[in-house]
Image 1 (spheres, rainbow, N blue to C red):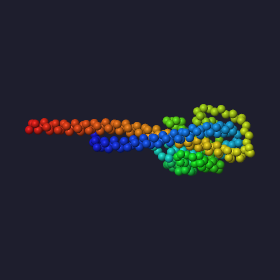
Image 2: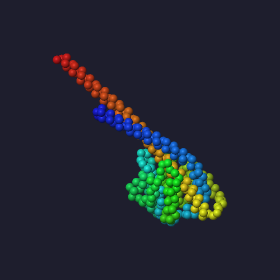
Image 3: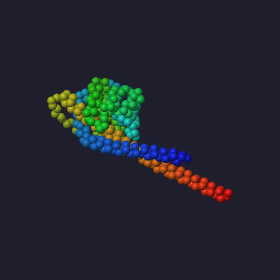
Image 4: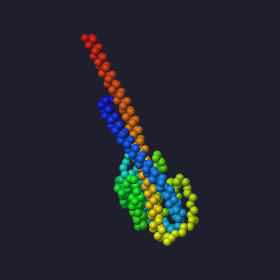
Length: 302
Protein backbone atom coordinates (compact mmCIF):
# COMPACT_ATOMS: atom_id res chain seq x y z
CA UNK A 1 0.00 0.00 0.00
CA UNK A 2 1.25 3.47 -0.87
CA UNK A 3 2.15 5.77 2.00
CA UNK A 4 -0.29 8.39 3.22
CA UNK A 5 1.94 11.15 1.88
CA UNK A 6 1.93 9.66 -1.65
CA UNK A 7 -1.85 9.17 -1.60
CA UNK A 8 -2.37 12.74 -0.38
CA UNK A 9 -0.22 14.06 -3.25
CA UNK A 10 -2.30 12.06 -5.75
CA UNK A 11 -5.53 13.40 -4.24
CA UNK A 12 -4.26 16.98 -4.61
CA UNK A 13 -3.25 16.35 -8.25
CA UNK A 14 -6.63 14.81 -9.12
CA UNK A 15 -8.49 17.68 -7.39
CA UNK A 16 -6.58 20.19 -9.53
CA UNK A 17 -7.35 18.17 -12.67
CA UNK A 18 -11.04 18.17 -11.73
CA UNK A 19 -11.02 21.96 -11.29
CA UNK A 20 -9.38 22.44 -14.71
CA UNK A 21 -11.80 20.11 -16.52
CA UNK A 22 -14.76 21.77 -14.80
CA UNK A 23 -13.57 25.20 -15.99
CA UNK A 24 -13.11 23.86 -19.53
CA UNK A 25 -16.58 22.33 -19.41
CA UNK A 26 -18.13 25.68 -18.44
CA UNK A 27 -16.22 27.53 -21.17
CA UNK A 28 -17.26 24.97 -23.80
CA UNK A 29 -20.87 25.19 -22.61
CA UNK A 30 -20.95 28.96 -23.18
CA UNK A 31 -19.26 28.66 -26.58
CA UNK A 32 -21.53 25.79 -27.61
CA UNK A 33 -24.67 27.77 -26.76
CA UNK A 34 -23.47 30.77 -28.80
CA UNK A 35 -22.56 28.55 -31.75
CA UNK A 36 -25.88 26.72 -31.43
CA UNK A 37 -27.78 30.01 -31.57
CA UNK A 38 -25.84 31.02 -34.70
CA UNK A 39 -26.60 27.69 -36.37
CA UNK A 40 -30.31 27.81 -35.52
CA UNK A 41 -30.64 31.41 -36.75
CA UNK A 42 -28.89 30.65 -40.07
CA UNK A 43 -30.55 27.30 -40.83
CA UNK A 44 -33.79 28.78 -42.27
CA UNK A 45 -31.81 30.78 -44.84
CA UNK A 46 -29.62 27.78 -45.68
CA UNK A 47 -32.73 25.62 -46.19
CA UNK A 48 -34.37 28.27 -48.40
CA UNK A 49 -31.19 28.67 -50.44
CA UNK A 50 -30.90 24.90 -50.88
CA UNK A 51 -34.52 24.74 -51.94
CA UNK A 52 -33.90 27.33 -54.68
CA UNK A 53 -30.80 25.48 -55.86
CA UNK A 54 -32.76 22.26 -55.85
CA UNK A 55 -35.46 23.82 -58.04
CA UNK A 56 -33.00 25.00 -60.67
CA UNK A 57 -30.47 22.15 -60.36
CA UNK A 58 -31.99 20.27 -63.31
CA UNK A 59 -31.12 23.16 -65.65
CA UNK A 60 -27.42 23.07 -66.54
CA UNK A 61 -27.80 26.31 -68.49
CA UNK A 62 -28.80 28.12 -65.29
CA UNK A 63 -26.06 26.62 -63.10
CA UNK A 64 -23.33 27.02 -65.72
CA UNK A 65 -19.90 25.91 -64.52
CA UNK A 66 -21.30 25.03 -61.09
CA UNK A 67 -23.53 22.27 -62.46
CA UNK A 68 -21.09 20.65 -64.90
CA UNK A 69 -18.42 18.17 -63.80
CA UNK A 70 -15.18 18.17 -65.83
CA UNK A 71 -14.05 14.74 -67.04
CA UNK A 72 -11.22 14.22 -64.57
CA UNK A 73 -10.58 11.70 -61.80
CA UNK A 74 -9.38 14.26 -59.26
CA UNK A 75 -11.49 15.46 -56.35
CA UNK A 76 -11.06 18.40 -53.99
CA UNK A 77 -12.09 17.84 -50.36
CA UNK A 78 -12.53 20.45 -47.64
CA UNK A 79 -11.69 18.67 -44.37
CA UNK A 80 -12.94 20.39 -41.21
CA UNK A 81 -11.65 19.42 -37.76
CA UNK A 82 -10.72 21.14 -34.49
CA UNK A 83 -7.82 23.43 -33.70
CA UNK A 84 -6.94 21.29 -30.68
CA UNK A 85 -7.83 18.07 -28.92
CA UNK A 86 -9.65 17.29 -25.66
CA UNK A 87 -12.98 16.99 -27.50
CA UNK A 88 -13.71 13.28 -27.29
CA UNK A 89 -14.23 11.52 -30.61
CA UNK A 90 -14.89 14.71 -32.59
CA UNK A 91 -11.68 14.67 -34.63
CA UNK A 92 -11.44 10.88 -34.88
CA UNK A 93 -14.97 10.62 -36.27
CA UNK A 94 -14.19 13.11 -39.06
CA UNK A 95 -10.98 11.29 -39.97
CA UNK A 96 -12.76 7.93 -39.97
CA UNK A 97 -15.42 9.34 -42.28
CA UNK A 98 -12.77 10.70 -44.65
CA UNK A 99 -10.90 7.38 -44.63
CA UNK A 100 -14.09 5.41 -45.31
CA UNK A 101 -15.03 7.78 -48.11
CA UNK A 102 -11.68 7.22 -49.83
CA UNK A 103 -11.67 3.48 -49.11
CA UNK A 104 -15.06 3.05 -50.80
CA UNK A 105 -13.57 4.57 -53.95
CA UNK A 106 -10.52 2.27 -54.08
CA UNK A 107 -10.92 -0.53 -56.60
CA UNK A 108 -13.59 1.21 -58.67
CA UNK A 109 -12.97 1.53 -62.44
CA UNK A 110 -12.26 5.26 -62.06
CA UNK A 111 -10.29 5.54 -58.83
CA UNK A 112 -10.00 9.19 -57.85
CA UNK A 113 -7.05 11.20 -56.68
CA UNK A 114 -7.60 13.65 -53.85
CA UNK A 115 -6.43 17.12 -52.88
CA UNK A 116 -7.37 18.68 -49.56
CA UNK A 117 -8.21 22.10 -48.17
CA UNK A 118 -7.85 21.84 -44.39
CA UNK A 119 -9.59 23.83 -41.68
CA UNK A 120 -8.34 23.14 -38.15
CA UNK A 121 -4.83 22.19 -37.06
CA UNK A 122 -5.91 18.63 -36.34
CA UNK A 123 -7.07 18.14 -39.94
CA UNK A 124 -3.82 19.66 -41.23
CA UNK A 125 -1.78 17.32 -39.03
CA UNK A 126 -3.85 14.34 -40.19
CA UNK A 127 -3.29 15.07 -43.89
CA UNK A 128 0.46 15.65 -43.41
CA UNK A 129 0.81 12.58 -41.20
CA UNK A 130 -0.92 10.32 -43.74
CA UNK A 131 1.12 11.73 -46.65
CA UNK A 132 -1.83 13.07 -48.65
CA UNK A 133 -1.91 16.10 -50.92
CA UNK A 134 -2.77 19.34 -49.09
CA UNK A 135 -3.64 22.15 -51.48
CA UNK A 136 -4.19 24.86 -48.84
CA UNK A 137 -4.60 25.28 -45.10
CA UNK A 138 -6.93 27.85 -43.51
CA UNK A 139 -6.43 26.73 -39.90
CA UNK A 140 -4.86 30.03 -38.81
CA UNK A 141 -7.43 32.17 -40.68
CA UNK A 142 -10.63 30.60 -39.32
CA UNK A 143 -11.13 32.06 -35.85
CA UNK A 144 -13.61 31.51 -33.04
CA UNK A 145 -16.20 33.02 -33.16
CA UNK A 146 -16.39 32.44 -36.89
CA UNK A 147 -17.28 35.32 -39.22
CA UNK A 148 -18.76 35.00 -42.68
CA UNK A 149 -15.81 36.97 -44.11
CA UNK A 150 -13.42 34.22 -42.98
CA UNK A 151 -15.52 31.41 -44.39
CA UNK A 152 -16.00 33.40 -47.62
CA UNK A 153 -12.23 33.72 -48.16
CA UNK A 154 -11.83 29.97 -47.82
CA UNK A 155 -14.75 29.11 -50.08
CA UNK A 156 -13.88 31.64 -52.79
CA UNK A 157 -10.47 29.95 -52.98
CA UNK A 158 -12.26 26.60 -53.41
CA UNK A 159 -14.45 28.09 -56.15
CA UNK A 160 -11.42 29.43 -58.00
CA UNK A 161 -9.86 25.94 -57.89
CA UNK A 162 -13.09 24.40 -59.17
CA UNK A 163 -13.18 26.79 -62.12
CA UNK A 164 -9.74 25.63 -63.25
CA UNK A 165 -11.35 22.39 -64.45
CA UNK A 166 -8.86 20.19 -62.56
CA UNK A 167 -11.53 18.64 -60.35
CA UNK A 168 -14.63 16.64 -61.15
CA UNK A 169 -16.03 17.00 -57.63
CA UNK A 170 -15.79 19.32 -54.63
CA UNK A 171 -16.88 17.93 -51.26
CA UNK A 172 -16.73 18.94 -47.61
CA UNK A 173 -16.34 16.52 -44.69
CA UNK A 174 -17.35 17.79 -41.26
CA UNK A 175 -19.34 17.01 -38.10
CA UNK A 176 -23.00 17.97 -38.42
CA UNK A 177 -24.56 19.30 -35.20
CA UNK A 178 -27.61 17.25 -34.20
CA UNK A 179 -27.68 17.93 -30.46
CA UNK A 180 -25.32 18.55 -27.57
CA UNK A 181 -24.85 14.79 -27.25
CA UNK A 182 -24.89 13.81 -30.93
CA UNK A 183 -22.63 14.97 -33.76
CA UNK A 184 -22.88 13.22 -37.13
CA UNK A 185 -19.87 13.06 -39.50
CA UNK A 186 -21.11 13.99 -42.97
CA UNK A 187 -19.73 14.09 -46.51
CA UNK A 188 -21.50 16.82 -48.50
CA UNK A 189 -21.03 17.34 -52.24
CA UNK A 190 -20.84 21.03 -53.17
CA UNK A 191 -19.95 20.85 -56.88
CA UNK A 192 -21.29 19.82 -59.28
CA UNK A 193 -24.66 21.02 -57.99
CA UNK A 194 -27.30 18.34 -58.50
CA UNK A 195 -30.72 17.67 -57.06
CA UNK A 196 -29.89 14.28 -55.47
CA UNK A 197 -27.06 15.69 -53.33
CA UNK A 198 -29.09 18.74 -52.33
CA UNK A 199 -32.04 16.55 -51.33
CA UNK A 200 -29.77 14.31 -49.25
CA UNK A 201 -28.35 17.32 -47.43
CA UNK A 202 -31.81 18.80 -46.86
CA UNK A 203 -32.77 15.52 -45.19
CA UNK A 204 -29.66 15.77 -42.99
CA UNK A 205 -30.58 19.30 -41.86
CA UNK A 206 -34.38 19.22 -41.79
CA UNK A 207 -34.90 15.50 -41.16
CA UNK A 208 -37.46 15.15 -43.95
CA UNK A 209 -37.68 14.95 -47.72
CA UNK A 210 -38.48 18.38 -49.20
CA UNK A 211 -41.20 18.84 -51.77
CA UNK A 212 -39.59 20.34 -54.86
CA UNK A 213 -41.42 21.61 -57.91
CA UNK A 214 -38.86 21.10 -60.63
CA UNK A 215 -40.96 22.84 -63.26
CA UNK A 216 -40.96 26.25 -61.58
CA UNK A 217 -40.03 28.89 -64.14
CA UNK A 218 -37.77 31.70 -62.95
CA UNK A 219 -37.53 35.04 -64.71
CA UNK A 220 -33.84 35.92 -64.76
CA UNK A 221 -32.70 39.48 -65.44
CA UNK A 222 -30.50 40.90 -66.88
CA UNK A 223 -29.11 37.54 -68.07
CA UNK A 224 -28.35 34.03 -66.80
CA UNK A 225 -24.54 34.35 -66.83
CA UNK A 226 -24.49 37.45 -64.62
CA UNK A 227 -26.94 35.99 -62.10
CA UNK A 228 -24.96 32.75 -61.93
CA UNK A 229 -21.63 34.57 -61.43
CA UNK A 230 -22.95 36.76 -58.62
CA UNK A 231 -25.89 35.02 -56.97
CA UNK A 232 -24.86 31.38 -56.72
CA UNK A 233 -21.49 32.12 -55.03
CA UNK A 234 -23.30 34.39 -52.54
CA UNK A 235 -25.85 31.66 -51.75
CA UNK A 236 -23.11 29.06 -51.42
CA UNK A 237 -21.09 31.40 -49.17
CA UNK A 238 -23.98 31.39 -46.70
CA UNK A 239 -24.39 27.61 -46.99
CA UNK A 240 -20.70 26.97 -46.32
CA UNK A 241 -20.73 29.45 -43.44
CA UNK A 242 -23.66 27.54 -41.95
CA UNK A 243 -21.76 24.28 -42.46
CA UNK A 244 -18.70 25.61 -40.63
CA UNK A 245 -20.93 26.88 -37.82
CA UNK A 246 -22.40 23.37 -37.55
CA UNK A 247 -18.88 21.99 -37.25
CA UNK A 248 -17.88 24.56 -34.64
CA UNK A 249 -21.02 23.91 -32.56
CA UNK A 250 -20.29 20.17 -32.77
CA UNK A 251 -16.73 20.77 -31.55
CA UNK A 252 -17.79 22.77 -28.51
CA UNK A 253 -20.54 20.26 -27.68
CA UNK A 254 -18.11 17.34 -27.94
CA UNK A 255 -15.55 19.15 -25.75
CA UNK A 256 -18.22 20.03 -23.19
CA UNK A 257 -19.26 16.37 -22.88
CA UNK A 258 -15.64 15.15 -22.81
CA UNK A 259 -14.70 17.61 -20.06
CA UNK A 260 -17.81 16.71 -18.05
CA UNK A 261 -16.86 13.03 -18.24
CA UNK A 262 -13.29 13.89 -17.24
CA UNK A 263 -14.55 15.97 -14.30
CA UNK A 264 -16.86 13.16 -13.14
CA UNK A 265 -14.03 10.63 -13.43
CA UNK A 266 -11.73 12.91 -11.41
CA UNK A 267 -14.37 13.25 -8.69
CA UNK A 268 -14.83 9.47 -8.51
CA UNK A 269 -11.10 8.91 -8.36
CA UNK A 270 -10.76 11.59 -5.69
CA UNK A 271 -13.47 9.93 -3.56
CA UNK A 272 -11.84 6.52 -4.00
CA UNK A 273 -8.38 7.79 -3.06
CA UNK A 274 -9.80 9.68 -0.07
CA UNK A 275 -11.27 6.41 1.22
CA UNK A 276 -7.94 4.66 0.72
CA UNK A 277 -6.14 7.52 2.46
CA UNK A 278 -8.49 7.37 5.46
CA UNK A 279 -8.02 3.61 5.71
CA UNK A 280 -4.25 4.04 5.55
CA UNK A 281 -4.41 6.66 8.34
CA UNK A 282 -6.64 4.42 10.41
CA UNK A 283 -4.26 1.51 9.92
CA UNK A 284 -1.25 3.66 10.88
CA UNK A 285 -3.02 4.99 14.02
CA UNK A 286 -4.13 1.49 15.01
CA UNK A 287 -0.58 0.24 14.57
CA UNK A 288 0.83 3.04 16.72
CA UNK A 289 -1.75 2.42 19.47
CA UNK A 290 -0.98 -1.31 19.38
CA UNK A 291 2.73 -0.63 19.70
CA UNK A 292 2.15 1.72 22.67
CA UNK A 293 -0.10 -0.80 24.41
CA UNK A 294 2.42 -3.58 23.76
CA UNK A 295 5.19 -1.41 25.22
CA UNK A 296 3.15 -0.64 28.32
CA UNK A 297 2.35 -4.31 28.86
CA UNK A 298 6.00 -5.26 28.48
CA UNK A 299 6.97 -2.63 31.10
CA UNK A 300 4.49 -4.17 33.53
CA UNK A 301 6.26 -7.51 33.26
CA UNK A 302 9.55 -5.82 34.11
